[in-house]
Length: 145
Image 1 (tube, rainbow, N blue to C red):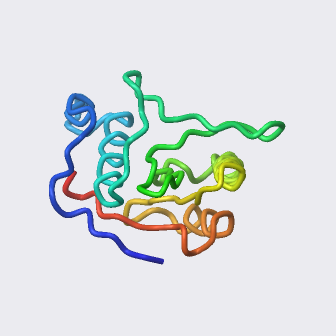
Image 2 (tube, rainbow, N blue to C red):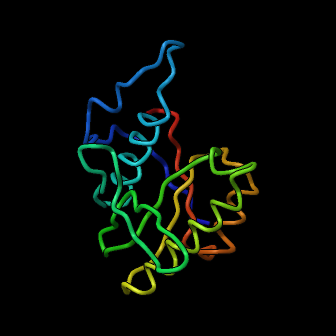
């Protein structure tokens, strides 16, 4: 699997989202997700798809489901970004979202990819590799977000 370094300061699409700090000094889940999407967009020379409400571009596959695309790659790739919240009891749901992402990308003539921050659970990563292929699963360092 390719390893990407999240070095440098990506320019967030929504600077206010990156600064969304909760009471204990950590980022809210929404702000963390937005920061990670910004990092991946910078690494891939892609474009973040979220709208002013924080929703990414939705793709639907009839009779299977819907998922969102977080970043569009420079060649139109459908890129999803996530971390450990996808694991545990949500692993089956994550697998379904991977199916939707892959089927929608195939239908639309583009590649489906997934980017994980370093330290993501092997169960989550292995499921993504099974669904998308080893060549379409990547890691990035989000420690400097």
